[in-house]
Image (spheres, rainbow, N blue to C red):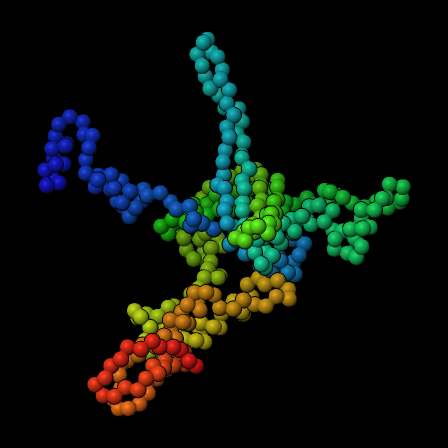
Length: 347
């Protein structure tokens, strides 16, 4: 029926209506090559000169790498082109006079590890002498006393003798179908930093930090994603690589699968790589993180051994699971009897 209708629609005059298939082929053909990109699949890299980081011992070890993972939202580059209209014997001609790079706003999660706050603190201490007085005893008091009629000459503001830029670039990577589109902001400078607001009436308030930067140029690149190779810096340092159960519905067979490396055992799940990962940034005097939520979910799945059915004879049924848990039915079953009973886990 549809073929007759399509032939009819295409036979007379210019075609105005066709089957939905003609429109979908624009986006579906060639493996969705012309489909729009998704705005939530991206990552950001902050290229910071190592010599400009004041806190080398703590934040400087992993903070520059981790801070890009905490970007909640980032504006892509915007351009403003100034033009003038010239009058040439009553003919209007538009000419370009200036190209302006519009500021870019970046919103971070205000994380518990002080990674995003650490970005601003290191930037602040590198450029502005005011920040240095808080690092020594009575520094703020001595640095901001009345020194108008004394021989004390403290440094303030930009009197920090810094010449090299803190940022080399801020690189944005949009990921799509195994490819990436890179946009690099060259020599960015922070024009504003906004900490979030505190409000006891908002119980669902998730704190964020917002930074706005100006920059000198935009460089574009694109290519194919190759892990740990291209684009530079794209490596799954924190990706949960532990495989889940390979069967539908957990059962006692998972113990055998785990022993063969086909499903994770309790040691693999609870010995989180984050504990011994030298690249994982944990501030001083804070405990290492434990298993992630997904790892706990996998552990719970493996613990749910499937009851294999009623046993013969007058005895209690207890089947151990892969992680050493047991399922107790709490009833006595004899031959040829079945009973559906809620189960509970006991160790």
